[in-house]
Image (tube, rainbow, N blue to C red):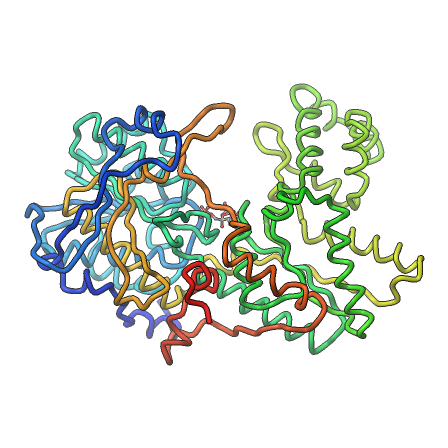
Length: 555
Ligand code: FBP
């Protein structure tokens, strides 16, 4: 297989480990902290996790190893969407396991949790794993979105583990996958299987973070990749001076990615969904906010600009949520069939407006026709509108265009508004991991093995102090139940890891808020350029501005 020269060089990169893990298992001692409590709903979580609740926080330090010396057979899966660095988690796990005892074995289950249920596996060896070191993607094993959550599935997993003498499973996933890791750990403990479960925090979205997990892996590389592209677009905009670029960025519900990209590139506008919900902004108000920037810039002869839009924004606009829930109701049961039989858009439009309240019709009518139609293109298996498929970048640019025409008629605008649209998502999920993600992921995997070696179950591999250099990172583990609360999901109360949305009182958002008025009017663009893998540490090893601001180390 032909590989690029960068890939050849990256295969040789040696990821940095925190000093407490650097000298191998014989010199890693454990220090237990105090017993933990879930973030809220203590009694309920305790009741649901009687065997794994309240366990102690763990920190590793340099010292004499006191773990039991036994052969370890570990299984690993990648779960959910790709995130740069997943390969390095597995490499770190493999290296720790083999350097502890060459007889230890690592099983990789192919195709995510679904592959674990099907017992579809490979056994890792040096030859296979060495091809994936420091590379992006999840192709080392593949992944899927099967949810491991039923007793029946847990019993199948137990049989698979017993068949191969696997004594621990590592689940590399986001908040949902790690919630399920906690359920599996509880099942294993309750049934005295002796099998352990360790999770590793993955997702480019950055929404798996809390007081213990400073950031999920992949966020650093994905946001650097998008910021490079946004910076390039900004430079093009500033060169040609004729387009407004509306750029949607991935990130599901939370706006962490959008915010980080804005901090890195200083666009004219960046919408933050959490703020929109907090201020209960309407589509019209959001469009006016963008229009103000377009008009002010046009007065200075700058008929160009950049707007960043977070993927999940429409769900956070209260009037839009109201419209979506009315459409979902309207199409429930037999009505969807009736609707689907109508052949022309005019007939469909008639059907829709007759079934909605006046308030909902008013919102529906603000939307450009292509967006109105998108609401009915593809619905999920329950018949619900798939909000994530809505091209919000087109929605907002169209409403802005309408409003600019109104302002033009009133003599308040005399510029040009030519728009280009972009969606940045998949471009960032499999990039070569930045040095930060390569080091962080390798450390997470290495550390996961140390947690296994010390017998922990139901823990998330925790590497902290991440805004400092890798040597000073702190390695340890946190019981997953500590991060859980009870939330209503699909009409039922469920124990889940609390998802982190952008904190409007946090330093990252505050910094953005302090600067955005200037950015909206002036051309303050920053061009971050491509991720650098080689060169001075301050160019290659720095992490996100969000993390630096949160940790007070941003200069
Ligand atoms: P995870 O939450 O599984 O890490 O996935 C993140 C993500 O990239 C989201 O940002 C995006 O909305 C979604 O996956 C896309 O999913 P798919 O790969 O199934 O199209």
